[in-house]
Length: 217
Ligand code: E4P
Figure 1 (spheres, rainbow, N blue to C red):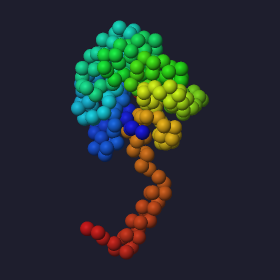
Figure 2 (cartoon, helix red, strand yellow):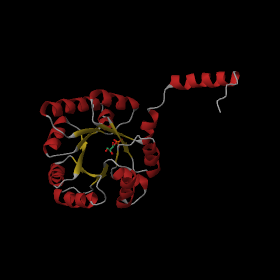
Figure 3 (tube, rainbow, N blue to C red):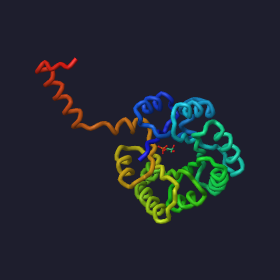
Figure 4 (spheres, rainbow, N blue to C red):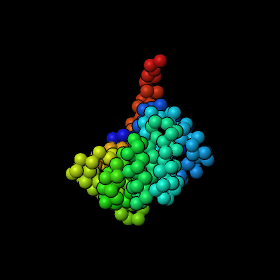
């Protein structure tokens, strides 16, 4: 499973990228707002830093304007994936932009039928939002499983990009289901390394190393 990082925070992206943990980046208007940066500027910086796909989201509602914005975003770098919402206009924009050879990430997906439409419109990535479904007592992981089944039934090549990931368990479950990609905030990716027994075991080893005056360098 590929790891995308869901942020526009350059420092956090760089730190994870140095560790080989970043196969791509996803942003959205809320994350750009949080960064306090200009969208074109910060997106260019991310694209220069990371080799994999960098999703940049359009901010228009009608297909024509989404296409114009998508073309402009795509000019930033070769690794831009234009992010469009899963609306009828977003699907029209997806078809045009992907026919022109751009990577397209269709976002705000909350049903398997929506994912089916995105695949037919030529999406490179479909972004089902797990956490936001869980927030309203629906089952985000069930959606990932349903999309996996449908895409495999018909050989769709659109990659399932599990999004709105809030917990380390979401990451593990997505990997078990077979999501192609997951995108998570930097803090969730860092938490994947944590285990209480690792901490306890290390504490004991450090005590014993000190007691035995064990030195290596
Ligand atoms: C995905 O591309 C979105 O940017 C993101 O995962 C949304 O996550 P949220 O529901 O935590 O805002």
